[in-house]
Image (cartoon, rainbow, N blue to C red):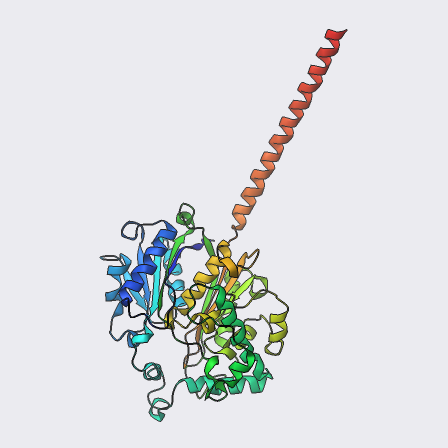
Length: 418
């Protein structure tokens, strides 16, 4: 089966505010880093450019008109995906798998510090007849879901607060993070209750930043500078958009997306070495871990304490900051660094496979999953084993010849001495 690889990543450090640069300058910085990582010239080597953005957040329509200049995509195929970052990666991968493209670029960013009223933008996704006229803050949906989840699953209230402590401490080892902190469980539980039972520190804070990812077909990836990280499986799914008919206890979109990705990859969540999953809200990390088959919600604290494959070693959105549609791309970049062995102080030893999961946020039930590895394909492994066998056979023959020469030399010496 044909494969697609991530061959280049570029991102800017995340910041709560970034008045010193425009969104175009952020995009350009991330793009330059990604192209340098992959060792490509965008004007010569890239066949397709995909932007992941939402016009409501950008404040302008048809946003792909604003992509080409800073990405090097002028007069080239450019399109926008109105979704989450991993949806854009899936689109790029499918383009490459058609055989019509060899290299594709995916970009997404957040400039939320310039958005005057984020909650009003979020409210535009609510049902215009039944929900939006009520005028509630969309974060209240997360509070309702959290109450339903911890009530039905018997997850402890303190477990949710523990996610915040874990992720913000992990972010201390991530130079890209915007909100690293060494905080205590008591500080989290003492923070203001904004959307009962959701407390202030249990919401990931917004951040500005940009991420660019370069993907290539297997044939092109072999000759490129960036170490290829293979997309073994991908899946995406939506549950019902209706607040009145959704499942408030289970993240079914994550479960369904994993099923698709697992069928494609031939392995599942139990076979990976690290997880980068959505933690937009603290309870969401536990809910997603359960939906992805990592652990039961009631076993979450025990799982974390056991130091099994880590969840969000990057610090997640709670520690690094939330990037709107670019959040999934940021998590993908983190997983790529882990599988390349270049994650520095947060490196997971011996990481060979990773699971990356994203969620588009309230009020949606839309998510995606990628299964990644730094492993060779089965065909390559067979070829390598065959090559090793041939090499071994050659050594055996060479060794036999050497022994014969040694015996001949000893016989000649005996004749001379005789």
